[in-house]
Length: 297
Image (spheres, helix red, strand yellow):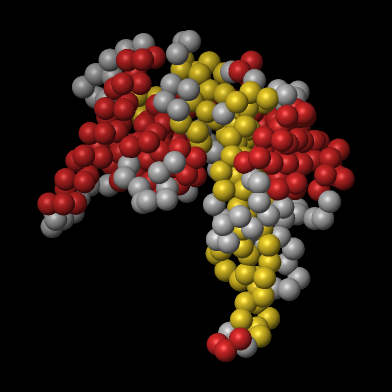
């Protein structure tokens, strides 16, 4: 991830996505014509998307993604970091300058805004979401339950011609950083029992559970606690004591961090960006988010 001026953002994104996604008709047996089309990458001929499309479907292209990134960069005063990923669609993580830092606990537990742009080929609108990057543990997460932190952008032809509207959309999204920051500070001030929290997220093995299931549960619990202990030492937090009381902020990040960094994952999901996306949709992470959000109600 490299720091770039606004004028350089498009070129770096364009270089990362140096291919088009093209629509071709799909044939049945013996060349039989069908009303369906498939999407394919121009550079690798790989299939894109999760199914066929109709003749009316117009796939978006790299220039549309560049328009979104340029608008986000303008909303954040031009100087950003950018990281890209492609999997059945374009993903771009945009980081404003470090001046946007929020100190959560002392000087060692900080978070920074991250804009995640998703332009998929599933027929849905483009999405841009405000999330946080916690440098202590390299966690990146988009909290789904925070109002105003996600905007939808309808894919129409000539997105770049609508740049003023796009910039305004991202400026509204920028304002949600304050809302997200207030929530994070609230979670830091809410206390939970880590043992009880993990029981609510993962439960306990059933009495008749296999030894494999028991071992998996034990190893996961130990890995989460090791992550929690390590982060508490690095941030200078006091010993949690025999009752294992921690802030809701720490509890959530221990679970999310475990899934993002430590949990086993399938081949094809091992890159840093892929693990971020996978953790963002993980059932246990979403359950942990619901639990901590309930504390703020």
